[in-house]
Image 1 (cartoon, rainbow, N blue to C red):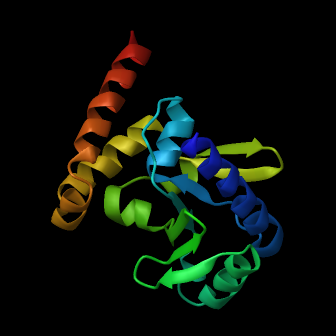
Image 2: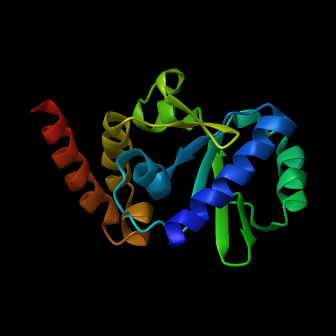
Length: 162
């Protein structure tokens, strides 16, 4: 139930990004993985990737858009917003290449209920979560959830190859 609420909220943010900023965001993190696989990864928040310019030079435009959607800005380091019990955090798409050698030009494009967005492929999630395990901050923050996700992804990839 929580995942569905988070996904519906993501779609609203994505529509606004599409319309107001001409951005096709990436649905990232556990919610993105859940939408991609149909498996429940118990996402706690919505992680969205946008072009770097919206984190740097055009941050004010993105912040204003989120506030117009009823969100309150809460954390500059995480670029995080909250509305009721929903947390939305932004990072930049270019970091996929830098952090995990994921070619963000090859992401899967999805159009659903009037929202255009992108998803990583399973192989991309392997790269991302493998890198995340090397990051002690993230490893401690997530109680090794990334390792469990990797095991599920590897099993899914094996079943697809059969």
